[in-house]
Image (cartoon, rainbow, N blue to C red; front, top):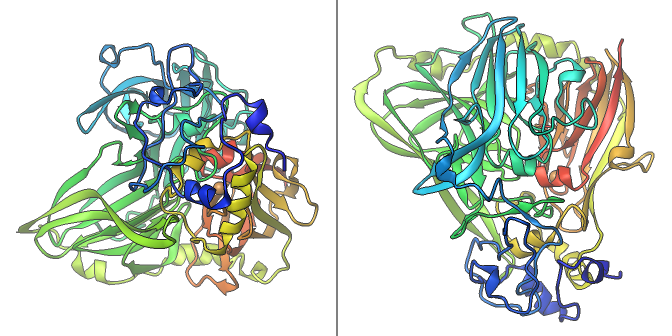
Length: 577
Ligand code: C2O
Ligand code: CU
């Protein structure tokens, strides 16, 4: 393979004759170079007109060696920061989100704009919906339809997608598929109809690798009419899980013309809950808190553990589970939601943790790593209304079971469509490509953290393509255009290729419809819930049952923002039944 990149893209400067061993070490993580790339003399530092410069990406673990060939290498696109000419001190400080209770036919004005955010001790120029972080929490009764008058006051075109909501196609907010992007200064009116109870979220669907990362996301909670739809709880918390990549100089730049970090997606080094570096709450002994969890990170999959609490898994993306179950941890990939009841039996201070297995490619080993996301103080005072008995009873949700019963006859149907998930390398330097190919011998089913920040930094949506391939037609990504009719039910098999260039898990999201995960690697699911996003680990095969119920032209894609930017999306059309 000819490394066109090294010649044609002035930004990418990498020695092309490195010994394979050296390259392997390089992949494995590069040298902790000084944060300011300006110190690398002899390398062209791409700057945008506002003077934003690339610098070496922060390293998750200290890397033992320096690789001269990759030193100072930069992505082949210009760096982007939001409004770099503006002093954040001149911006309004974002305020914590408001709960906006809305009824059928109510109107919400929603504005994407610049805000000043203070995270920890640091101040950044970021984006916010209505000056809030996260965006307003929209709470509506099931069946309501609201009008959202959206205005774009940021410096990029955008559009708002109502993730998981089975609304009318033209309001789905996907530029290029359902609408034109909303240019800076312009507006768009959305009508959002909430037909399913549960937890949803909204976010931009245009360069979301930048916009969502900078704070444009918010939750929606749709309340079912039945007061006992969920079991009893003493309170609720909405936790939006995220991460942000920062270094000494501030926010780490994004790619302007195209996304960077398309290999693994952009992992942040600062974990956030609701935009803050720590979630804190106080409960009484015996209290049951309902936790509404949403992963809004670009690529990070969380593994949540809540010390000192019993956890009961109640609901997923678009419905409750058939049966409640007690769990020890909750794994959420980007865009996924879970509804979990937590009961705190003993007084004390407990942490919300993200324990993961990180990978050290350099030494060929996994190592445990734990981040603390929050702290819960349990007072030694009993809760006034004790729901302990109800909590310890696992409910069966007859409404969900009956709804799914209508589809059980289709569980055994033959596979209607098959997708394979893989990657294709374009202009990445050939030595690196060769060594990455050797490196598939040992791989994690889920990448929990960025183990190769330098390689990731140099990959863009121009030199790496992530692929969804229809194995029967050979069509890929946006060339796939499946045709369904409303009322049809389809079995789709999705296989995540292990032998691809740096395989990775993919959270696959289907717009406008709902689906069931029937089986994973041939093992049938024994407790179903309706979903809009499911994460396929490396090497795995999932069979899903898609209910094509909502007409229109819809997108399906990987919800790792950088994989979406790097091609991993397709469209399908549902004709009215
Ligand atoms: Cu959450 Cu296509 O989006
Ligand atoms: Cu992906």
